[in-house]
Length: 286
Image (cartoon, rainbow, N blue to C red; front, side):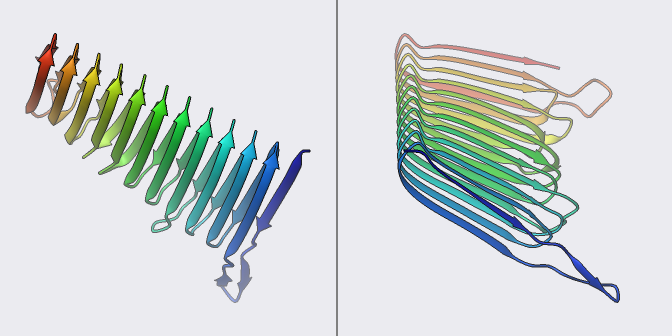
């Protein structure tokens, strides 16, 4: 049996003698069974909240929110097999409006895609447990962004990207299990990335680029055959730290300072390893 539910919410600003009225909207869907499909679309001039809960197999949850000058909140909660969640949040012209996305998935072959764009502060949290989990988070805008990705199980993969013309974006990735893979990219000023991995054959790749200052990245790995890479390109006052414990660990740190016409570089790189068969390479230029 296939169940499909679509909720559409829209609010139109009403102007009277130069004043506007903004309405708040809320959409909620709960489903259990097989081949569930739920979507909530909210195109508003007021605050919006969307919640989807699903239990079963082959579930699909989709939230699409856009707003001119308001706060957006979305949450998807799924348990079972072959779960798929997408959350798209777009904001226009808001100076103080916020966007918050939360994804919770447990089971096998989970897929999560979160995209947050526009001005205003953004926050995304993805929590996945099980096998073959895949998380993709994109934050793009003018103000601070924060994302938290937590995965446990086997063959977990996380792709996180923050593109900001503002300052102080933060990414936290926590993975435990076997064959974990984390790829994190930031461009902006005052950015920081923390990656924590435990298990076997963990891999973390961090890339930070900016024309600004004070960029930092830290990778912590415990287990066997861990691989950590940090690249910081054209960043002044950048720091990179790798801590590894176990067997067959590999750490590569590459840092380049700003272009010659800009202020001089202040680069710091530290690799700390304990165990057997560890290798560390640090490269700094300009």
